[in-house]
Amino acid sequence: MRKNKLKQMFKDGKPVINGWLQIPSAFSAEVMAHQGWDSCTIDMQHGVIDYSNALSMLQSISSTEVTPLARVNWNEPGQIMKILDAGCYGIICPMVSNRKEAENFVKACLYPPKGYRSFGPIRGLLYGGSDYAKHADYEILKLAMIETKEALEKLDEILDTPNLDGIYIGPADLSLALGEEPGFDKPENTKAYKEIKRILEASKKRNLFAGIHNGSVEYAKKMISIGFNLVTVGSDQRFMSAGAKAAIESIKGVKKGQESKGY
Image 1 (cartoon, one colour):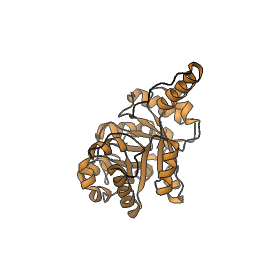
Image 2: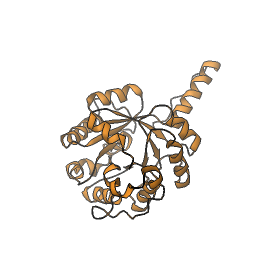
Image 3: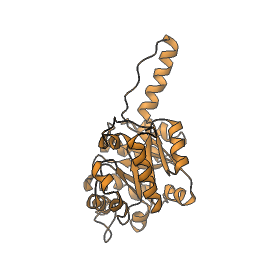
């Protein structure tokens, strides 16, 4: 089976630079994948992407050495299994709030006896190889998003879930859970930043993968410096809008308002 290079990078202590895809286009996914990212995540939660879009996007990413990941829209076994069967090599699962939800997520990614993933890796065999079923349990990356009030209270039990590879922090929902304004690149004097540090330290103590979503390159570099293994910077639609905005402002000499703080 094709190796998941992100797991090897983790072992080697190399940070993973992750691209984020929200536009439902095989071509834009292909363009993004050719820019040198270590991985690209198809956002099926807040992007405008459905399964048929995701399938063609995975095929486009496969034209490069970039590792394909997906953020599903919920902790729902059917969706998790279907996107894995399409050749996705890692799942970011949102709103994991306790041990039971973490176990359900992990088991949906694993074949029996470790989990209850149904066998039928139709495109996974093409992308991963003919021995996919023998090695998929190990190669597939399983990241639970820590972003709810309950998850913060039950962090240790979530992180101790067997076969969970790590966590991914969504600072916007995390901020909301703490009564702060949603957004990325949280200042050090915020409750969200303190919780980000606590989640990171708890993950590193267990030798788990730790990822975080960032709004800027500078903040992503900072997160790498404090120990995060995976950093996401912006997204395809943000890069497109920022580039267009900068060009128009330069030509017209008129500065537009600040962009929203969403994904």
